[in-house]
Length: 78
Image (cartoon, rainbow, N blue to C red; front, side):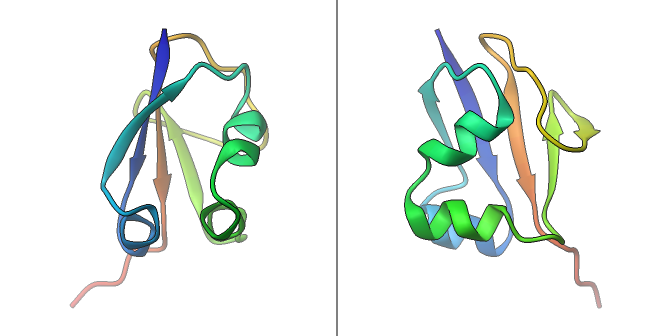
């Protein structure tokens, strides 16, 4: 099975798409480590937030097959 990754805002530009399916990884840290170097560095920035299946999480969390992991940059509005 796989995980679904979702990239929002400027992270979508870095990733080249708003989402992708990736092979299962057991933790958020493992997912981030498997990303391309520039994208991995960008999602490690302190202002980036993470959501698993629509719930904000902090730190390294365990993942289950089929989870959706979203990377959320700071929101700017107008």
